[in-house]
Length: 296
Image 1 (cartoon, helix red, strand yellow):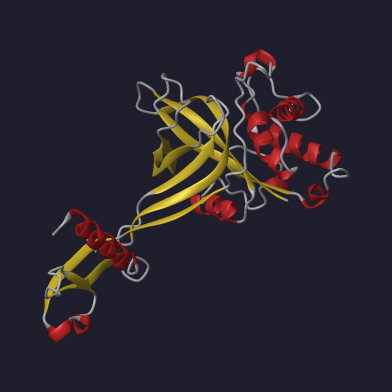
Image 2 (cartoon, helix red, strand yellow):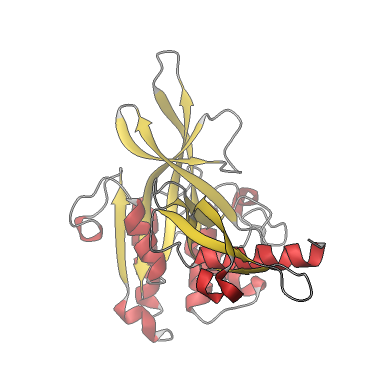
């Protein structure tokens, strides 16, 4: 068979198998090779009745099917907290929360040039709102500061009138942000939030293994959640990823895909975030400590 004909067959086979991906755990398709036509070219089909003279050679094909479910909010920018032109306090070392939130708000406000977004991040981190300091920004500071910002700017941004903030995670916040006292930001909750195009920020904890085998939190970080991907066979259902814009990286069009691994941290089940680029070298694990969602 010539290279061109083999490529055509491979493409046909791929398209045919893809039809079975949502119908079964493991696809099984019958492919027939018809007798040669007048030009001596093989003909392939999924039905032996389509072959002339009913002469067909059955090619049994069984292949594991990978499914992909993916959504990315591509319009959300990726400002870097270390951007030299921003001149954030302390060179932006602790400015991850204001920058992560500014990524989302700039989109909600119709988009803005980077110079304007830098001013937005600076405003969010100021003493009037999140009061970001030498220890960074806690979930409580982010929630209260962001709510204050939304309230004071709702006249110019009508969508802010219907804003709703929700937190799930390990730290204590005002009950109005976590009415059910959910201690875990569950993956389905995050994925549903992206599907509804909510604005979401992940609070990542960095942990180091101690001599007694326990994990100690040695730092943390805020990132903007911009998407998710589910990849795996229908049989095992494995393969879930969160897609983020990380303020600690160089910014620009550099979305980061984190593998989500459900495991235990000091005896508690939760989500380990694999391959987290900005995790310090002295840390052994990046952990999803919590998350905040904003609906507008």
